Image 1 (spheres, rainbow, N blue to C red):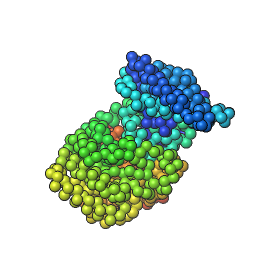
Image 2 (cartoon, rainbow, N blue to C red):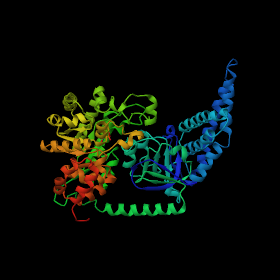
Image 3 (spheres, protein in one colour):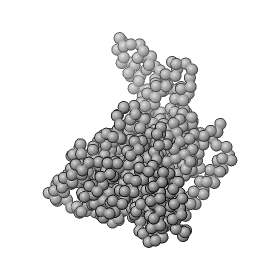
Image 4 (cartoon, rainbow, N blue to C red):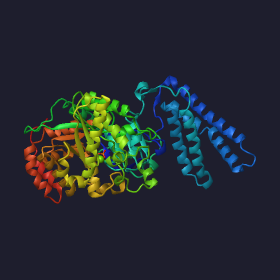
Length: 590
Ligand code: PEP
Ligand code: MG
C-alpha cells in the first residue's frame, strides 16, 4: 500500500531506493557490501559468530550453581532457542545472499524484521521476548567484532552491478554516527527526530544527499525493504509509490542532476556581483578529507572547520595534540594557501562526545544542554585540553594560512581568558622549538548577547563569524533539534534579521572581517538578503557553493543594499524581501 510521511526538508534532492531500517542503538554497526565470491565466507562468518555465542551460553548454563533460580536456566534456554531459530540466522544469511550485506548488517536487518513481528503479537509474554532477541543479537554482533581476521573486504554496490540504492530509516541518528556515514552505502536518510539545523541534518547536507527529519513515525510505518522516495525539497517521504509517481520522481531526479552539472561549470568563475563586488565563498568542513570537496567545488577557503568531529567516536578518549596537528595540517595543505578557519571544539548540546542521539539525550534528562557547558565554556573548563588544541592549531599555521575561531562566546572575560591562553601556548611552542605564524583570532556570534555588545568584542578580535543556526535558536528560544517547535524556528524573524544586519554593519565599520557560517549562508534563498546587508564572505557546505555563486553573479549589491531598509522595517520581512529584493535583482543571466 502506498502512503506518505511528512517531515522537515533538510537536504535537497530526490532519492529513490529501498528502506534499510536501523535501530538508533545499532546505527554504528558496520554497513558494507561483500563481493559475490565472498558470500559463502560471509555466511560462514555469521554462523561462527552465532556458534561462539551458543558455546558461551551452553557453558554458562552448565556452570550454573545448583541453587541458581530456575528462571535463569529457562532464560538461557530461550536465548539458545532463538539462536538456533532459522528465522534469525537463516534469514540473515538470505540478506547476505540477496543483498550482499556484510554479516553484522544482515543480522541487524533481520532483527528489525523480527522485532516488528514481536511488537505486533497479542500475547504479552511473547511480545516481551523481543528484549531477549535483542540481547542475543547484541551478543552475536559482539562475537563478530571480536572475530580474528574480520570480515570480507568491502566493495561498493556498483562493483557487482544492478543493486538498488539504499535509504536509511531510523528513529534518530547521533551526529557521531552520522559522520561515519560519510562515504557510506546510503543515498538518503529519514529520521523521526530532529530539526532543520540539528547537527544530524547538517551532516546530511554536508554529504549532499536528500534527507527528511522530524517525521515522528517514519521508523514505525516504513518496513525493511519497502520502496521509498525521499523528496528532500518538500520534506515528504513516499512509501511504496505507484509506477506513475515513481516515474515522475525519476524524471525530477534526472532534472536535478542536469541542473547540478550545469552549475558545476561555474566552479572556476570568480564570485563577483554585477556591480563588481568580490564575494568569498568558503566551505564548512567536518574532517580534513572534506577539504578536497571544498577545493573541487571552487571554495576560496575554509570558513568553518568543525573540529569537534575529530573528538567523536573515540570512546571518550580525546585526540592527542599530535593527532590534531596532523589533521589540521592535512586540511591546511589540501587548501593550498587558501585560509583555513579552525573552530575550537564545540562539544555539547546536540553534539555530545559519545554516540548519544537527541532522543537518548532527552532520556538522560540533561537540563537545557544547549545552555549548559558547551563549546568555549567546556574548553575553558578543561584548560589542558584547550591548550592542547590551541598548540595543534598554531603548529598547523606553519603550513599555510590558519585562522582561529571560538564558538559560543558571550562574555568579555572569556575573550580575555582565550587571549591569555594563546599567549601561554605561544610561549610553550617557542620553548619547544615549534614553528608557527600569526593566526587571526575570531569569535562566533551565536548568542544574542555577543551580537548586542559586538563593538566591545571587536576591540579584542580580528574577525567575527555569525553562526546563524545558534543565533536563531538563542534569539527565539527554540531548540534547533526539537521537531515539536521546528515551525517557530524562523530565520526571517525581524529580531534575527536585525541582529545579523547590525553585526555585519558594525564589524565592517570597525574594519574587521565578518562572515556568516550558519546554514543561512548556504541557502540561495538568503543570498540576496545577506549581500544587501553588506556581507561579502559566506561559508557553507561545498555542495551549496555553485547555487549560491549563481545568485551572487546575478546580483547588484548596491541596488540590493538600497532596498534593505524596506525589508528590515517590514512586519513581514519574507514577503517584503520577495518584493523589494527581486525588484533590485540584476538582469543578466549566467
Ligand atoms: C551555527 O551555530 O550557526 C554554527 C555554524 O555552528 P554549529 O552549527 O556547529 O553549532
Ligand atoms: Mg553553533
